[in-house]
Image 1 (cartoon, rainbow, N blue to C red):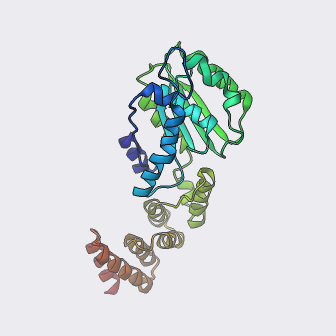
Image 2 (image 1 turned 30 degrees about the vertical axis):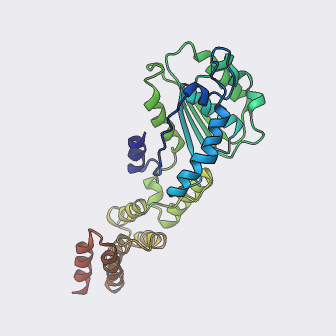
Image 3 (image 1 turned 120 degrees about the horizontal axis):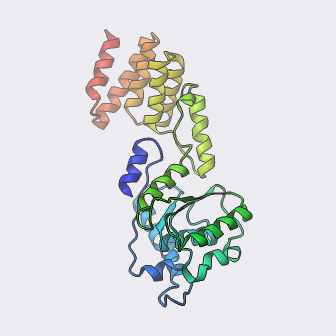
Length: 306
């Protein structure tokens, strides 16, 4: 899961994530919020959810830089737990990915009691992605749940059930996680068409993501930098490139590279004096940060000073 999250973030498909794996001391107990006649140990789901909210979340938020957005991923019983959590406590996680959720537990408890379980208010832009493989034993319950979702048409909930007919109960786990992340962040990547329009379009794209995900999504430094060079080198539009690089300076004033890139655009527009000032800032920040590109910054400054 960690490698997959890094892959998606590294390719601009999604933001970076903190991946937290939670081992269970008793899986059936922890992941079943209901009693079950054939599972005497079942019924500890509420306590497990309380552990997540009151112990695990504060511990993570104390030690790491976090954003107010959480994704719950689970397989089988954990997938059922994810679905149950969405219905009963939608404020705990903003997105839920369930690989073959075992909704048949306790005589289809979640499906038959969905109306009673559903919280009165679903969060805006809540997300649920479920899969099922070649599993005739669980498919009827999932189909019934899909019909309930279609009929209920819950405001604010974006959901999908995908039938992975070539997979079995165990083989669909990684596919489900990847597909769930891909679908959740389907609009995340800055399209080149928007980048070509300049700084205002870049800001509008990330303002839209902020509205969708419910927290401030800052344009990543490297994405803005790429947009600037797209305009400068491919579109030959130095004026728009300068505006985009200035946006990056405003967003990341502690960086060295943002000043160097702005200097390059100014130099390309024939504004050597202004370019020299930005290159000088890149050198200053580069020295302070011990930036590996410091030698290049100095060379760029030397070039416009000659």
